[in-house]
Every structure is written in C-alpha cells, then in structure tokens.
Length: 345
Image (tube, rainbow, N blue to C red; front, top):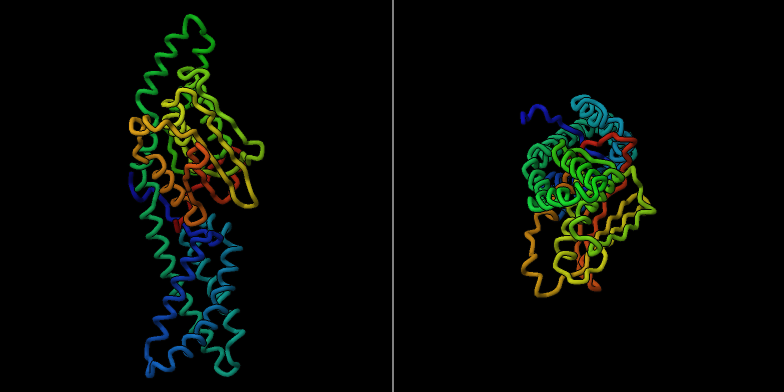
C-alpha cells in the first residue's frame, strides 16, 4: 500500500494516554529548562517550583480548550487541524499565564510564553504524527492478516464437509450454513482497519457459532449476557470471534463434558466491558491444545492502536474457568458508519 494513501490524524486530546504524554513531555522540558543557565545549585529547587506554577497555569487551560475542541479538530484536514491546535494551545496558555504574570513587562513575557507554547505544540504534534505512523494500520496489516487466518483451515474444510452431509437430509439447514460461511469470510476479506459496531461483531460471532454447532452438536453451549450491551459501541473488528474460537479450541474440544462458554458484555459509565470465559481443559489435554497466543497479542496491539492507554486486556484462570476481560472507552458509531483510529496511539 502506498503510504501517501494513509492520512495523518490529529491526536484525540480527550484520550488519557495522549494527556499523560503531554504532561510528561511538558514537565521533562521544564526540568531541562530549569537547569539551563543555572549559576548555583542551591537555587534550582526554587527556580523549578516557580516554573512549575507557570507551567500548570499555561498547560491546564490549553488542555481544556483542546479537549473541548477535539471532535471538531479531528474533522479538519490535518494541516488546518494542526494550526487550530497551535492556536488554541497559545490562547489557553496565554490566558493561564496572564493570571500569574506581573503587570510590568507582562506583554513581553506573554509573547515569549506564546512562542514557547507554539514550539512545544509543534514538537508534540510531530511526536504524535511519528507515533501514529509507527502504529499505523498500514504497518499492522501483516498482524491483522495473521489474526484473520486464526480461523483455522481445518474449520473451513470441516464446515464444507458438514454442508455436504446436510444437503440431502436437511437442505434448508445446509443453505443457512453456507450463508453463514459466506458472511464470515466476507468480513475476513474486507478492509478491517477501522472500528466496527459491537452489534455487528456479535452477529458475526453468532454466525461462527452456528457453523461450529453443526460440528460439535450439543457439546457447544454458549451463555450470552448482553442485555446491557450498547450495540452502537465502537470496537476493533474481529475482536470477539477469535476469543470465542479460542474458548472452543481450549475449553470445549478437549473436554469430555464441557461447561458452557460465557460471553458477558456491558457498559459502566463511559467504559465498555467484554468478558469471555471458557472452562479450563483437563490437565492431560493442555499440552495437546496449547496455543501460541497470536490472537490475544494481536488484539492487545489493536487495542493500543485504537484506544492507547484507555483500553486494556487481562486474563486469569479462576474457579475452573479461563477468563479474558477487555475494557475499552465507550465510543458511539451511528448506523453502519465506521471510525478511523485516532493518532497518538
């Protein structure tokens, strides 16, 4: 893919990871500044504490303005949006600095402070731009392809054999199974670099389970707890299906009398929680069904790409179950629209 086809994106200034990076960079820059031209080490602490006061009064109003304007800035072309970021940062910083500046000589100090804010803003925008490119979906296509191949080849051939066995005895069921297969592979072959609606991911996973149910029969049981699921939530595509596939491979196939897989999806305030639990396999079957962790590692990378520090994935084995717990910020997708990943991840 031509790199020019992947547009640069501004960071989302409402994202906690972006805010933390700005705070860390600004305070590190202030620390270095407080050391420049220092004549006596005994005065460093006083100079640094005075500078911190100026920094906080400059930085916090600027971050507030950028957070409020972030949705609008994100819809602008990159160059216009970057200019807007610099302008808002200087306005917010100047407002805050005017509170602590002395009256005499205040104009000159305000101008110098605005230039400093501009320089810092351009530096940070350059950093976020490079970071976006380093984590760009363009560069993670190989990882996404690896995730898409997680639907194991034998699943495809087993599904076709199941269809062949049903064509004469249950033609309607065979036709439905072929439709599910077609929908599943249509999603796998499309461009999956943007966020997708959660209800579509759940529907895809249910189609996958319909296919596996033909092979596993009554051994496959799934308890869905999705009454409080926000269907319009934005999630990375192909996130739920690989987790359920792992649950089948590790928890259902090796067990003689498997317990149900549990899928629990709910929203708490501004966070979306997703739990997938499968029964732990027998000890003698663990080695035969030991995975390589590709799916979980791939999902972790894409959560970082889309949500930065605001998302996390944890795993644990408790009470005879292996649980994968994912938390992402709640972001709405209206209708069938898609959201591109924001920069700064």
